[in-house]
Image 1 (cartoon, protein in one colour):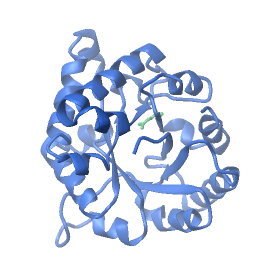
Image 2 (cartoon, rainbow, N blue to C red; image 1 turned 180 degrees about the vertical axis):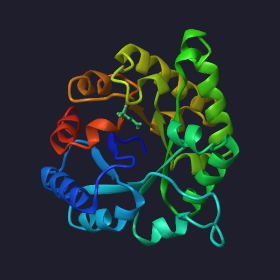
Image 3 (cartoon, rainbow, N blue to C red; image 1 turned 180 degrees about the horizontal axis):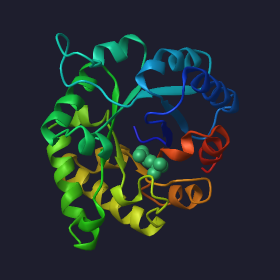
Length: 250
Ligand code: PGA
């Protein structure tokens, strides 16, 4: 179902005490139900803490990564069943930092998506091009391949449980945001691809988030684009007040 979502990707930041403080601030700030779904994606060590806050508030919780394997001898990994057992709602898959630093291939990402869906966790599947792809004008092809290899193997029912995040790599953590027109152009392209694969109804029901230097100053204009259903927020999700301003941008 198409929803408005603002999700904070904390990446590898915050001590336990800082995490507790930020979660408490967010939960309290959204006590009066906000006009979008609010998701906190803290490091995995704080997921249970976050789902405790979620029990008594309007907060939803997402993980930042999951193993492609079900269980067993995979030292250091966390499975979808484990995330499910502490009531995690969402999980980011295929973030460009995981693709780059941890060499996650499209094939592995597709397996991660499958595992999450098996355990009723909503994947937030990230796609996005590098600066040189944009300059060479191959950015549509890059995103199309990422979607084809990562999620278009799903059947229509499964696909209905997926969120997509378009995150141009040149905009992540750089302060250089895509213009609202650039975001809308790509989001519309993605929705059209989904129409071709799964039909108009599924495409119309898919939530597509924008990520990349989204902040309180640009969120409102980005979120007002027809095909932009919210944001995946990195840096600005680490400061409670900034994050809540973005949440209130709808
Ligand atoms: P940023 O990160 O908001 O700091 O650019 C976004 C992301 O990586 O999800």
